[in-house]
Length: 82
Image (cartoon, rainbow, N blue to C red; front, side, top):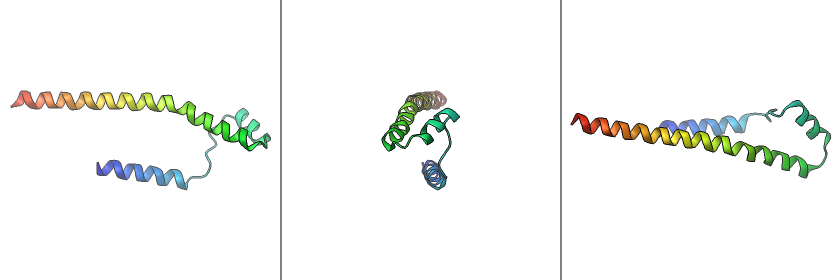
């Protein structure tokens, strides 16, 4: 648990200390830089975050299922040894 807390704190510090990420394709960046509408730019950034949610959710779900399966297998092995 302690390693997890250090990992989370490290990632948060890394994200807060970094400059703006240029993760958009060149066409998206050109549209955003040519637009002066702050609402459009904010909406675009929110849309990117919304599109990021399904892959993250799927990855976390798979990770949780595998972790539970591993702990169940370890529990069964320990009861078989006794």
